[in-house]
Length: 478
Image 1 (cartoon, rainbow, N blue to C red):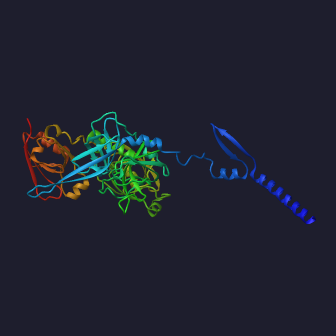
Image 2 (cartoon, one colour):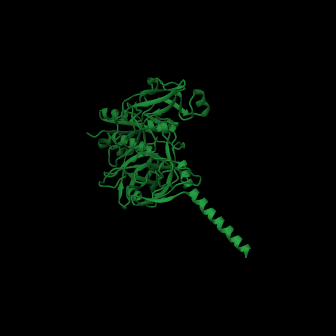
Image 3 (spheres, one colour):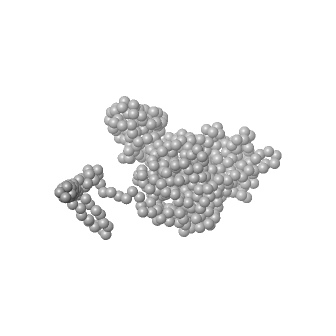
């Protein structure tokens, strides 16, 4: 009996000691209600551990749902089908018609739509289907291969549209939605997070291309190109453009053109018909850790200048080879892709405030940006100046096209059925190299030469992939 009493006494003593020890460590617990929501606060050892980790307030890692953002974005995302007609040549002159499909985003209630350049490239017929199944024929307002952005227009009003958000403010880890028409499915919404910013994946090609993509893990598949990347309040922060894949379908990585860059490109296309590209007048490269140590920088964040263009904007401002650009307009610059994106938001003649590192210290200068020809003037030829009279629209050849085709000239982007040019059998894609025997290298030169011609005109040029020179003769309508 004494044995059992001893065991009971030892058990009670141990239990009492454990309770006292736990209460000593835990301290007090109280419940506080703020704005109708309960919050449990712990004091004592547990409270000290949490306070030591962070003094900032905690926020939800994700919204409770994406319904509101999806309801805002979905009606403003359209399906785009583009047809390309190519001449078969030969005595029969058989033409081949191919097509591509993608997505687009309505940017204004009067029918302006943004999509990717590669969705409608070389297209002669572009059809837009709205979320409510209405179909329209779209007019190409302008296109920019260097950013893969194109502006279309349909004749309609009171359309749903998406408001631009600030792509600079998006943060890695932030939730986003991708809205588009993958595999020609209607208005598909997928969710993911921002995985990285300022990505260059070398997909656009050409020295003038701007690749500073927003990378996400939201599922994007063929047909999503040109669709919307929106934040959780339904603002547009990017245009979905590309994926990295070995299978041809989504494998975890998708990329979008930042909305701040898209917005500038669209303003230019709408106002001028072409992008007013500003250049800093330098060749740049990544800054590695070894070079950073040599110049005395504490880290390898910046852009190394390895060449300065003669009479360019940078030379005028005093920038030199070996300088490291570290900031633009009070924004820290970490990589060449970021710098290219920031400069890409300006026009020739705009001034920027540049921070750079030289001889162990930081300096600041103002630079007046120029175009590729070292001019500060914007080009005000839209390309459709000849459409009412002759039924033709023109655009400049891109640098990539000039290198690939080894031709200087002007691209014919559209020919109106029944027009003077249409009667000559000229096809979209024709590259005008001369007007009445005088060489032309830009749309502005071609427009001036055609307008100043007295009556008869001869347009000489080439089609891509065909070595023969074509000549089209006609008279201007009186």
